[in-house]
Length: 159
Image (tube, rainbow, N blue to C red; front, side, top):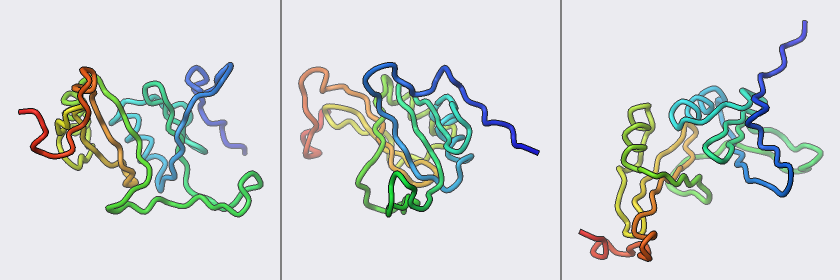
């Protein structure tokens, strides 16, 4: 007996007719848990459920799959689970129109934020972690829209 083909939302596949677009691949421990987070909590659209999972998030896509051994197109390179901790070298950056509304909505849906939104002069921002510990910055441009750069010291913050 053959398994049914995975459901694919062809309308939302990241398949440019010309040029390119950017997607982000993350290694996840539990695909269903991550799919739920990016679709239910952050409001994305599931394009492919698994192998790999793909979620359209606003005007971008997050591709998720468990790690694995080298393949012919990446010989000698294994894809391994992210080890969350107090350092990071890459993170997802989401720009929003209303950070306070996103913070309240996503927190109510179970998102775990590092801090509430903080006004940094050029922007208001905060960070949360996904189920695998990946860091996600959520920011709203404010002062930057009026030529103000980010404050470097707390005493430089407005108010």
